[in-house]
Image (tube, rainbow, N blue to C red; front, side):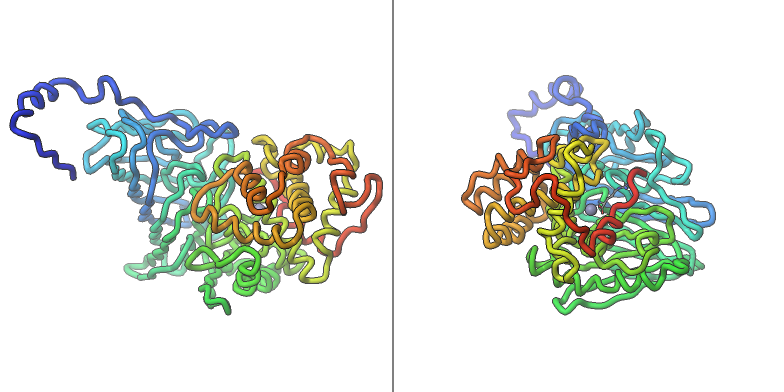
Length: 495
Ligand code: ARG
Ligand code: ZN
């Protein structure tokens, strides 16, 4: 509620102003995209979200999702209208309490026109009532809503929110979340953060989750189905909540033998990356047929396939490493994906070393030796891989080799100070590859742009001379024992 006190002498002028429509000159529509070159329509212009409150109901039998999203935001320009990214059917939108008009546009835009234009720098509350069957919706010809025999799951990158809540869908606009979902008794609803309460009434059970630290939209997750939920606390005091589909069949044992190590691995990673940044940790394994894992904040998504060849703590290390590199410190633009995947892969290399299954140096040597100079692998530059190559093996493997090259160039002392310092430097915020290069130069006191150009930006195999301590060109390195389990992390690409 805003009250303006008008000085008596200004009353005449004020009543004159009332005759002029407020939007006439300065208020304009917010852009349909936030300005990411890889994904021009992702996110939106003109406002910044601070909190999503989602109160939902889901029926697994019909895949019907309905509910109300309350979004707290602040305008960053004078707005006559603004967009949300969303695919379900909207029945009502309110802006600051007043009914707003709305229309769909493009692939996934919901255009909201408030009754009164919004001034720059003011708080806005948007309430969206909606319903729909997410599995019937698609954008650009794909869907990231994955149905399971007992429900569904929303977990994908770089987009997953459009199928379950309206948002400013870009990692550069992080917000806190309250997610409360009602499901038929016997079904569980899994989301991010801490489980605040469960309550049962008339055949429906409501699960209420809270994420109290800023979270990117693609890291918000929702799983509905029959789950076994386990809880515990790590030695370091981090509460752990995991969930396993009751329908994992042959993969059940290997999934639990991996994911139940979350607490131990969070503590181990804290030794390299500093204190765990969130109020809880954990993961869940739904009975999907997808093949990838995803670092959904505090509640990692794993697919059963990753445990089809036995337990794989390395994949758990990868996704937990993202809690610092990707979730706590998020990318500014999708081209900065190396900050996420290079470091999560490197954490697996450190784990391999710890387990005696190959040192980080041996893994870097193997990446270098196993791809000849004319291999297309070297044409993808991890520092700016292109929208179609965001999750290419080069971003992970060459990306991690780049980190080993940095370690060799500056020495272990500066290197491990950087590894631990970075999450503190940009805590709960966003940073770019350029920011990392600057930070590494600052901490090490060494000029590093040539090294990063060679390893991150040249679409060619680095010369052996620039790869001090990496194997010579043409030499072959033995495949480290950990290699196959490490690569199983990102076996499946695309939606
Ligand atoms: N960030 C994920 C990981 O490396 C990759 C997700 C890839 N996305 C996809 N749709 N396949 O753990
Ligand atoms: Zn990853």
